[in-house]
View 1 (cartoon, one colour):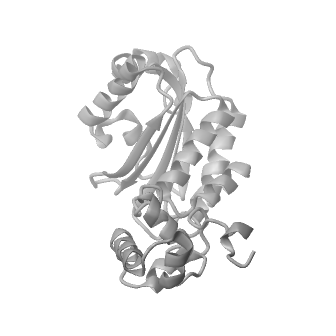
View 2 (view 1 turned 90 degrees about the horizontal axis):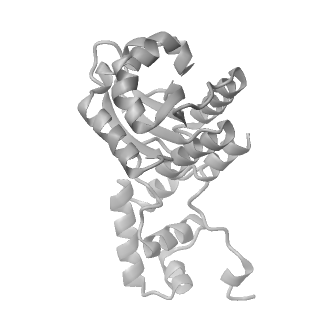
Length: 257
């Protein structure tokens, strides 16, 4: 639940909360490599389209490059997991590697010997969840290195429960994957956004940051373009009920103190 709360704290930034989800699950389950991905059209008869992906925890640059080569040469619909998971029923599915393949089949497979082995990874837990009212699918993978122990039933449940709880928040308290990010904003634009979200007018933002009103207006215009909105009201509505974008005011911010 603490990890779910940490994701909520980053809720305004889709890339940030998703990365915290994956790295947190790696920490809890003793995993080395974590992968987070978002797909559209993960359905029978449709071609999946990637929205975003990140990977962390590789033992070496060569291992990471081996995985990059794998995902760029083998389409999602041709991976062995796809055939076993596409069209799943319910809001989500979570599987360990042995739930998809027994050891004999796995260790003789091309997938393991040509790809996973080169990447230095073996056991994994994979979880994919359909995002409500969209055709978007959010997924997390956690992997152990070669020779690592199989995941326990408890660890499988941890991944499933955390992903289940976080999944309920996507599109609400958590920004949708693929949404314009906050963390990539230049520092001054981020400070301007923080001030706007605390209720400051452009004039007050200029006073707070020691900038001209014309400069602040340029930053606000840039924020509108970045988030695809046309007014301050639309901008603020993106962050209603979300954390992670507002810098909490302190006594030092109040000129009367």
